[in-house]
Image (cartoon, rainbow over all chains, first blue to last red):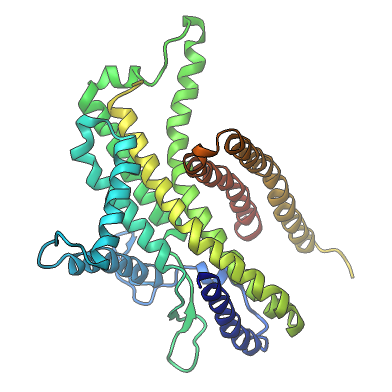
Amino acid sequence: MTRRLGFLFAALIGILALPTSALAAAETNFQPVQEFINEYWTSVTLGPLEMGISKLVVYLWLGMLVSVVLTLWIVRGGLRTQPGRTQTVVELLYTFSETNIGQSTLPKAAFARWFPYVASLFVFIWTLNMISFIPLPLDTHNPLWGPIPGLTIYAATSNLSVTLTLTVMTIGISHFEGIRANGVVAYFRSWVPPCPPALKPVLIILEVLSQVLRVISLSVRLFANMLAGHLLIIMCIGFVILLGKLFVAPIAIPIAVVFYIFEWGLVASLQAYIFAMLSGIYIGSAIEPHH
Amino acid sequence: MALTDQGLVDAAKAIALGLGTGFGAIGPGVGVGYLIGKTIEGVSRQPEMRSDLQGMMFLGLALTEAITFYALLMSFVAFFIA
């Protein structure tokens, strides 16, 4: 039954993709990278900061709405002891983040304080990743017809600013909590593991470097995964347009569908899980070094 | 067709994109293969550990796979921005 559904789903995407690429074959200056350029619709400046609304901001709002409002609506009027189907899904999500993300990474003393942060990171990033694969009419650069914007797949997490903000929050919290729990001197001393004194300078440099590189690796992992995933899908469909020949479509579109299912089914959830889990590990290991 | 300076730069960028992505995929490719091979080995020795090992495998898979994307990202930087 599920297999039949899968085939149906694949066929549907294929059928949907074919006419669009055939139509767009007339367009010669198609650029897949164009989809990821943040174009502001309105311009609101606050000093050096650009606070205008763009596709990215709308996607962030959508993620916020879906993750907060939908969950509040599902649990409206309190939770029931005999859970319905929707309540079961929410409970599953909560149990997963409690056992697999919270309890396995955070020390017991800090669990009550930082589990909400880590769990909301997981749910928010997961929601953003999941809605990013639904084609939404937000592409104002390539209008579908007249004023109607074209369909596009775009992830808010495929923008470095978003992932870097979340990362800086996590790293800032981990240092703050580490200093609060251990004291300034003891915390920075705990970075360097016990070693012979001759090796100390080398280890200090390495450990400081690894602390700095955490910011880059944590933010770029999520960003590059989502960007590469979306770019692969758009590129595969775009081959038909870029080469301008329709006979590429029977090969390129199924590959795009395979990537689409792989990215939506596995990578989107896995990256959200890894981001939240590493956040938990960083905060936990700052509070309790070498446990 | 004469080779202009701009043409040379464009060609170098295209080569950088190809070489960067290709070489960047070698290490993670070895890593992913090793990871999955070891998981299969572990499961064949202790089939009751299958679900635990699979969970850890997917985690390691995502961490290893991300390294490819670092290389891809830097290649894109070289191609589109530099």
